[in-house]
Image 1 (spheres, rainbow, N blue to C red):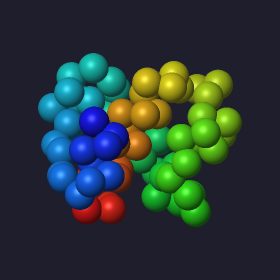
Image 2: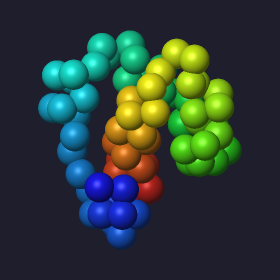
Image 3: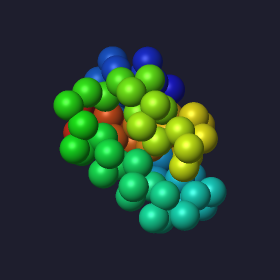
Image 4: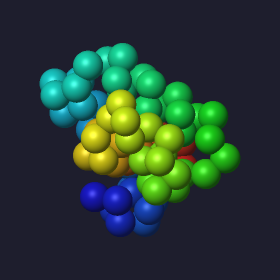
Length: 70
């Protein structure tokens, strides 16, 4: 999915995120990427790992990249 988003295709995964995760979780991770100088997954995991799983971070990052980078 990340490769699809990096190629320039917009994806809407809101329906999945909202069904599986709490809105506050999504907002916290999304805000991290808005304020961050990089979209690095490793940096995000280092900063957010104690509160969120890699899967949560990765999925919200896909949402962020799809909305902001494309």
